[in-house]
Every structure is written in C-alpha cells, then in structure tokens.
Image (tube, rainbow, N blue to C red; front, side, top):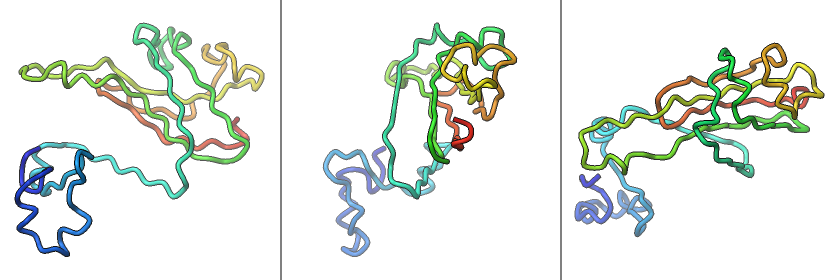
Length: 167
C-alpha cells in the first residue's frame, strides 16, 4: 500500500508531534497506518485476536494435500492427519490450519487465487484407550466436539476449550 502514512511517506512530517508519537513506521517492520476508507477498499475481512494469558508455546506440522481425507462425514475421514491435544487443566487453544500463500504465484495475472478446501474438525475419542490411535478416527469411535467451516480459503481456525476431563 502506498497511500498517505504508508512506510516512508512524506505525509508523516505534516502531523503534529503528539499525533505522530508511537505511530511512525519502524524501518522495515511492515507496519503502516491506513485510513479506514482505504482499508475497506483493500480488505473485506478483519480478524482480531485477544489473549489475556501469556502466549503459550506453539506447535506446527506440515501435511501434504494428498493425505487429506475430507470432513468427518466422508468415508475417507480416517485418512486425515491427526494431532492429539491434551492438558492437565482447563485451557483454551486456537488451532489454525493454513495453506501455502499463493499470492506471489499469480502476481501480475488477472487470475483469481483458488485454494483447495480446508477446514478442521475437533473430535474426542469415545474410548480413552484409543485417544492416541488412528482407530479414534473411524466412524462411531469419536464424538465431534468442534468444527470450523470447510472452504476454499487459505486458512481455517477454531477456538477449542480443552477440559482436563476431555483429555
């Protein structure tokens, strides 16, 4: 974005010191200030994340699209990659599934970006002894306790409340 108050914009000099304090772009940090009217013209969605707790360690994994088995009502659901989350206390976790950013691939093209469908399903194994086994993914062996939208977007996210009783 190259509008007023973008990185290295001469318009910063037009602001009073008290208006400029704490708002100038630090060299190369990618932050900028944009009027709401311009923001609305460039973006159609805004996600705001708030956490009152200190950040927790993050975990990540890479999964090939060919390994994906679809949502829980597909017979191939059991072939999905699965991750086990457990806690000794009641906690909230944000789980995000995201795909490689493909915007650079289409730079300068009139083509629209198309992503494979992505989503996530949170299940609880019906039998605690199967919680760490792929058997928990088979029909009748789990209960769905949360689900994101499945859509042709880059990411899907879900806030999950883990109870020590669900671990």
